[in-house]
Image 1 (cartoon, rainbow, N blue to C red):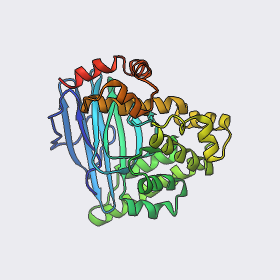
Image 2 (cartoon, rainbow, N blue to C red):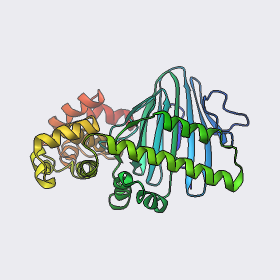
Image 3 (cartoon, rainbow, N blue to C red):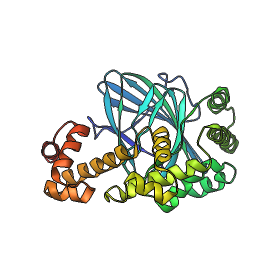
Image 4 (tube, rainbow, N blue to C red):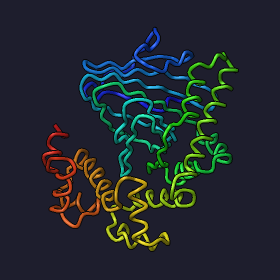
Length: 327
């Protein structure tokens, strides 16, 4: 597989990862058979340990941060990633209406649409295990692990929309599987085969955890469809009214609102606004459209509504944001 992500510090956008010719001593989880590299900044270091196998890629990131550092993650092609937060936290990796917060020992799977994603590394050490598969192999895996099917469906049918499955918590079996990955004694093709077995074990455990979560199973697939629908229709005020969405998907409005908020840590209304603000930011950066035109294109009734929502979400007015981005 090609590399899954391109990462850089926002404050040092031209600094690339450099090869590291030593073990990553800063990590508590050293992948002995991995290629190693480091992204350096004055107050932060991000180490990567990567293993490329047949039909999979594994990468373990270790961030050593003295002061908060914003980073930007570039996804050139859509991909499904399985993300395990081993230490520290991961906050708001996703845009476009999908919010992701992982504390230590939490994990989930996401489909990331092509584009740029921003997150902030807080002071301390953060360790994140990420692995992914090409589309065809993922589809084959969903035959054994049906809870993963919604992500394969999004990848195929709405590849420009980001989506996530529920979070789960690493238990003893997950930690034991991680230890097997780290200490695998195999080499060459045998290493490749062993790692695929361990990754499949991760998926089996995740599938089991999802099945045990409340309001999952058939409801999970429905919520993923609704989230994707909201991300695609946020600019149509009538289409994203709670009652309209509930009627479209055959669920009561109160139940939908409660289930959506529990699943995504955000109400539908807040998700709609977040989508609108995200697109408005792009239009402010890349066009000279007047504010009223932008408001209309993203679904606000008038420029004043956009201004109020934008300032509440971003902290500055739309015009101030445009000036800072177009310098």
